[in-house]
Length: 436
Ligand SMILES: Cc1ncc(COP(=O)(O)O)c(C=O)c1O
Image (cartoon, rainbow, N blue to C red; front, side, top):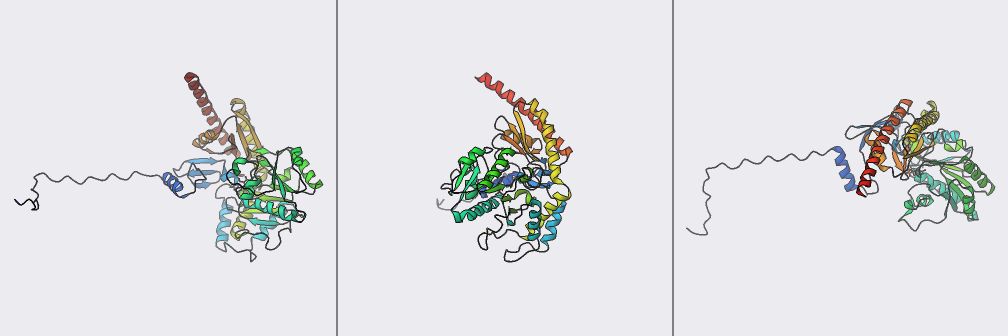
């Protein structure tokens, strides 16, 4: 046979093997899909845990339909709870009329929101609208620079351990090196004083000082309220030395601490106050409220932002303020805050790793004697969302609408988590003893 001839396959008597059934692709959950997409397509500056897909009032649901009591509220943002009917109505109504109007024209929402903020704050000045907390604080800093520019005064004294945002100027204003790390060279003109220490503020004064800026509760810094004596002395110092007093109320504002603005509890009138977070109840909106000294400092063309004061955002913010007033949510925040603090007192007594509960209104922090991230995770597993801040503080910023039943439920979850954590700590110290 010719060796080159094509070989004719001999007929086999056994049937060909049946085609193998392909195994179905492994099922991927929505949460897994979101995590993969996030890791692939988002810059890696956030490390989210759960995937939250639905919210109603003080509750949220994750992608696996697990329900949580939400004491994080989008980091003190959803003050009226999730999808509050008044806010849904405001969005619906305004979204059918007009969404965005540039600042080249009047719109029929922003002026009414500005009027409401002026009336509520009684600062005696005017309002500038923007979109976020950092942007509102940029506004405060630019106001201070412009105000001081004729006398070459541009320095701003801020507080150590403060948090003012992530833009270059606001991260420089922030008194925490970890926030500034890697972003040098930083803008000049910032000095950092010890919080609650008037002598430290005085020690940082120079002929170039224009302003002092602070939070009345250092929220990201571990929920540390300002001492009323310090704030009084600071206001007097600013008055005496002709300095601006700037208050960052991004987190404390809009009834979070039990009054519409935290400065009202301190009996001071700042020259300017920044707002964001709770103002839109979840819709991005920020504001700078000024007193008389700063109200006309931004002349035409000196400052601005495309989306600032757009009617959709302002319509929602108006509904937020109106609902807070109608439902007295500022006093609810005060009452529920007291209740939560009181209910947590026995927990502090029983578990030595819980050192204290501190804060104002519904901006509270449970101080743990060690890193608390795992405790935050444990609480979430048990159905309570909180925010670990400053390493060892469990921050609780529930909606201003919460009721006593929800507070008690949260405390029950905290008690259970404490018992479990205590058992874990005992177990791990026994294991350590054995191995040493
Ligand atoms: C006190 C304070 N200022 C400023 C900011 C920055 O706000 P935003 O993240 O909206 O820029 C925050 C945010 O957590 C804050 O708590």
